[in-house]
Image 1 (cartoon, rainbow, N blue to C red):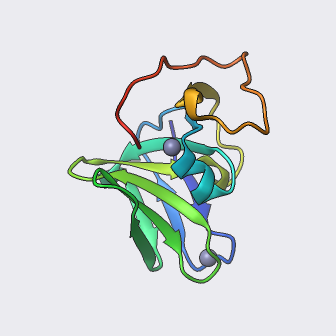
Image 2 (cartoon, rainbow, N blue to C red):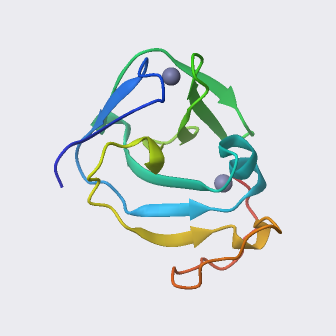
Length: 131
Ligand SMILES: [Zn+2]
Ligand SMILES: [Zn+2]
């Protein structure tokens, strides 16, 4: 897959993804829903394949992970499990065409009560570790 670019809403943070991009995973966990205002939707790349211009602010959202955002406009952009070499990138921040598809839903057991799970997209069975 070739390169994809993306940015926050105000444009202060721009980035370029190269290498193999994972298809999009939708996360229904309560942290993602609070963070994004609704579900999280992420592709993922190796950190070495993400080149960022601009000053990303980081919020330590759990013992396991931190979330990156733009201080200027508040766009939520990145999710990173600490101690790994991968980073998840919010699909909605990417320039189109992305060439990506949504192929999996996770933490569906934590979904909000105000919408339905799309049963056309695979759902990962529940497991205990939080995001
Ligand atoms: Zn911004
Ligand atoms: Zn989540």
